[in-house]
Length: 505
Image 1 (tube, rainbow, N blue to C red):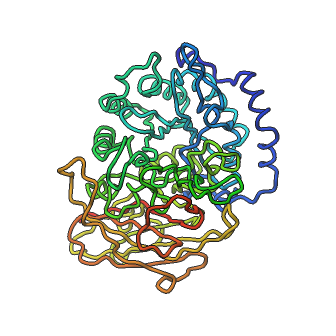
Image 2: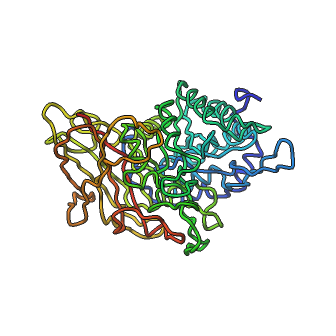
Image 3: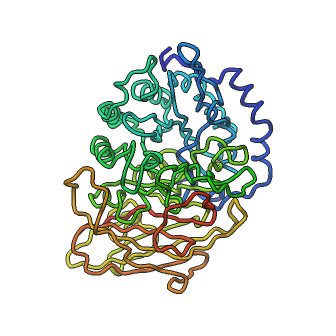
């Protein structure tokens, strides 16, 4: 059956299973008196941009297991992740998310299962939980690499787009198995196809250093691959998870600490403050890519499969990890924000707003809208004439309400980080940027309050070439995020990161 022949209406078995599993959960969340976050105030114009939290890596019951005794193998619904899509969306709403992406991973002929069963279930979830925007996508079984979040634009042909991409390029989809699908040549072919589509998808590498054997000793995902991806499809391949999911890996069912558990499931080289080494390492791979001038962004996700209270290693979407995008209440603008780096990330609800702007001296103020004098995350400030200084302003806000653990963690420090842009790397395997440094550290005694916002201002002086600026913050006293030992409490070690602002002169 071709993608164009598949009905968009959910079949009766799918609908009955959905209602049986969810029970009254969707209705309870919708009418249960939950107070929504500030961004959800219906009095605000729907097109006005604001910080909207989301999660682009969420699994449902259609991340299946397989009965390999049959030919082809028979998919087992709920064999890996267990929740219907409407449950994921309801929990996302409960924990304050505005948007999520359904990203089930595949297996033999999974593209057909997606088109025939998961897509109708997504349509049902969109109807039942309308206050959460739900993108269609998948966790791509990436050729010659680990997994990636593949996000499809919300267009009438979204089902057909994913069917074609999954069936042609997901390395585990063909049956019988085809080794030619698991090559970098196949991945670059996929990216060329995506780059040429009229409705371009978006791709972020998931848990990129989970298979790394040590610091800078990479596994399935490598620096050279990311450079090749971005060169091939600069409008599609745009970044990786800064903070991976499975952060509840060190929690038992009752929420107490499992001394043998690992945050993120990083069983070889650990996460660092909950973040992947490719992001957390100052002057590491992320900074190396930014130092080439690449528009390469970081995100933070749940990778939700099974909640820790039911024996899994996961938090619900939005319960612990959030990717904020500066966008209007609109699918297209959210995708545009993800594509163009209007993003900050946080874990443990350490903050719920982060505005980083860089301005020509004397021109500061507000969230930059590429007005020429001021630039914000994802944007570029062009210094003119004799300009050699720039003003950095950071505004962040601590949430007014406790996080999902019932705590209100406080930011202990903010770091302003800079690095030079020196052009394309001569060594495609390079993972360092020696020019990256912590430009300044600010604590409570150095910042000021403006209403419910905390404000930091800093002047960059004698700028003599292209560079970037990014910020991070933490509730700890660590000067640099340290490797997370087994049994680390994910709620005690919290960080947030902005994406960069670029400066040209």
